Length: 268
Image (cartoon, rainbow, N blue to C red):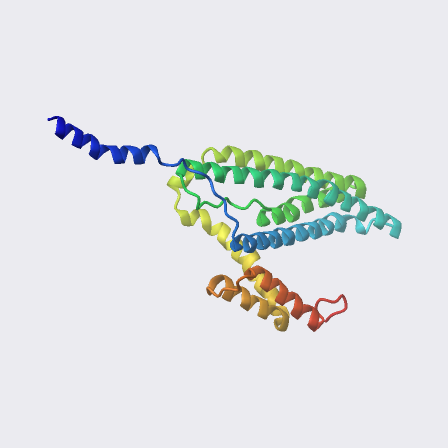
């Protein structure tokens, strides 16, 4: 009996030692070439949306009041007011929000890594909601500026009024999104995935997909070569090591554009 007991303890000892010698899980976030591709794509997408929003704001805020200005000096003052609101208030506030959101999304990804004991997790990129941004500019700010002009407000009062209406609408949208967020898990369980993705996918294909491809075809001798490299590199499995695919696309596009004259101010 004693021998049998000692044999059983000997059989159990290796597994016990193995379990006690297991190392605790450690979060590892390696930097890879794909991070450069994703980072550059995200930077270009956010930069393009930001420039589009700024241009849209200049158009919708100035259009209702242009005809009421008498001198070029007043036009310059109005443009200075619009730039102050766009760069001094909207863009600066957006930078603070995006910085906070990016760090918070990263924190959520690290927390999920620890919870699920795995390192192959990527957080959702935090950026500008392109459809919502253009919807706010052209459906809310533009309408508010038109209403202000119809009421006889000066350009200073009307532009300030339109900006404040946009801020109020943004706050209301944030409150609604926060309240609906509590029901998010239940909505995901009950609604089919297609119903949750079809609207976003349609907008993405239209504005971020087809819209960009059309631009490439406007100057085919410049746009189609980098477009082809992007398709082959990102979806065809062709490697461009050690240079990331996104950098190759940017370099080729810039070289073709500048050499053909499309990159110059007077290029046709």
